[in-house]
Image (tube, rainbow, N blue to C red; front, side):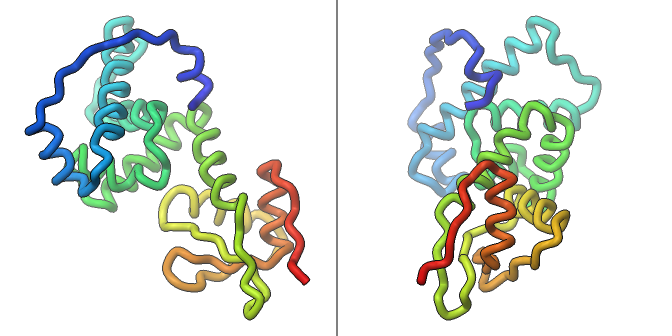
Length: 193
């Protein structure tokens, strides 16, 4: 939960979502946890409506409005890992278009959302697994914003770059992993004996 969400007073709303709506969302999103997605959409929509009503959010372009809506979804709890797929589905965009919208949102609302990207990366780096054969730490970094954040961080340092091993699995030298962990406030890891 972001700092903003934690400070917001809670008001209960009742919104009727039909079984037809649920079935359609399940088909569009290809998931069974439709209730969570509905909660995200309703929470984001309600926050947007209040912002409009109070004049806190007024937009002159559709691009700005779309970024604000993505911002609200992220504040409501949409994870960085699911953002590309969910934004593509909800806004009827290609994956590349969704990636651009989310990237623009992260740039536009950098201060407000920085903690979400950092937290998602910290979660990825928290429990690496040791590959004794390669003598490297394996970490799952799917394509997207968390991987891009990690890449910016390791490229800015003077440690060896990790290597893409297969798909989303990356092999990290211990010194590189510890450099990133240190930047994120995590304890260093030691290679198993």
